[in-house]
Image (cartoon, rainbow, N blue to C red; front, side, top):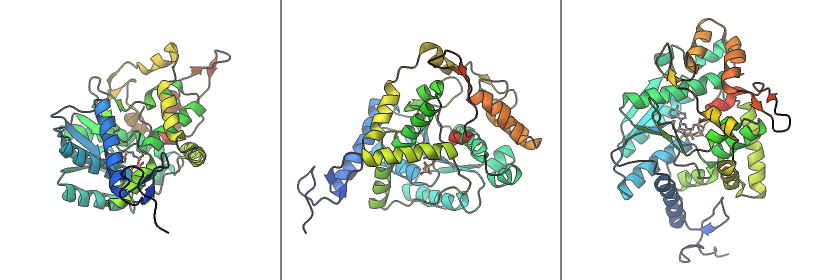
Length: 353
Ligand SMILES: Nc1ncnc2c1ncn2[C@@H]1O[C@H](COP(=O)(O)OP(=O)(O)OP(=O)(O)O)[C@@H](O)[C@H]1O
């Protein structure tokens, strides 16, 4: 049976159905739409300025590989005037990150982009394999997420970058919004929808150019473009609570594909009450130990690291992470504080708030 024509150009035969809206497209039209939508996100949100030195968080996975490809392509096509550098964090997970970093090395050569790699072992004295051996797999994502966020900042600083981009996509954003709603975490909810964050004193601004790109379209794009990326999931990633949000999102998306976009738009437009939203305005100072920006005496990474070194990781997770992550929020019906801190802290790995 002859294939239906592309609904955009009407010339070529359609070779795919766009996951976000069901449009039948040929490959060239899909590529063009996908690329120009990312360009639109970049331009309409003024993510970059000419002369910016941009550190691309490169993990070797599909999202950051597509991000790196698009940043290179769009920078040349639209003459953004950016200098791009790849920054990879080696968490020290044998059989996972060592393999994915080989992909990043190949892409660094292929795109002619310099690559800088920092390891947890060098920065913190612990690899994730050692951390898991010490504390088990239950809360290891908390350590990994906190350490990675800081490591990426350090890497960007080392290479002289003034912006960081990561491959967080629309599904990641919608999942995070759902999770924060399910936990009634208004401060995080108001922060997690931002396409760019940071930029205050001492913080390198972070941007998510793929914030509106559907995960399924990223996979299609990477597949049809034959990009070189690594597909294995992290061996230690349980992400219990995020996993539930992801399943819920996938179920909703199957019924109504535009749910992903709608959840993001809803998150962006939800007014957060003044007193709750103002919890975003944390007083920033420098960690007494490492100098990293923090709202406490010590940054989260130093608190966690101390606990690891003292063999008290579980106590630190129960106490410190509970109070830092889950500031009590007045409930809508009673006005009393709702107790938080019982949920799995694994969401830190993806959370950009
Ligand atoms: N080890 C790492 N080194 C550098 N950047 C990273 C690393 N891990 C994650 N990132 C950045 O954070 C983004 C989101 O990471 P996440 O852990 O959610 O992985 P993911 O959704 O599987 O993405 P990817 O497909 O790029 O691995 C990545 O796209 C990448 O830009």
